[in-house]
Length: 110
Image (spheres, rainbow, N blue to C red):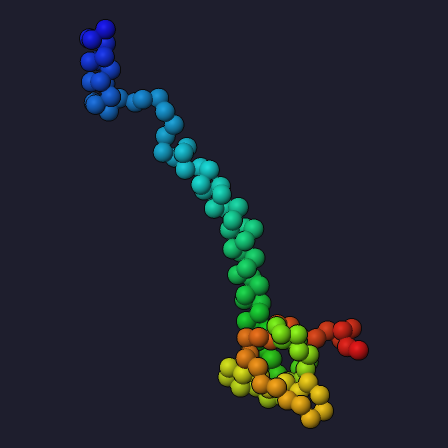
């Protein structure tokens, strides 16, 4: 009994394989979880962000837009970081450029 325990300890200390799963096999679930997060969360968010940035860069005077606060207006003036919206005949509002969320579609007009 004592001799077999000593042999088992010697094999373990010498680096003999223990028969358990390897490091690569234990990392597979983490890699799969990362891939799922990438394709379901990270990648679509990056695409939305790049589309929003392209839309902001393409804004021109006279475009009809909707802000994140819900204001509908026509761009009267464009600054580097701001947009002046005309929301009524004599009412103009200055908003941060990044708060413009979308262009108005033609079928959205009242």
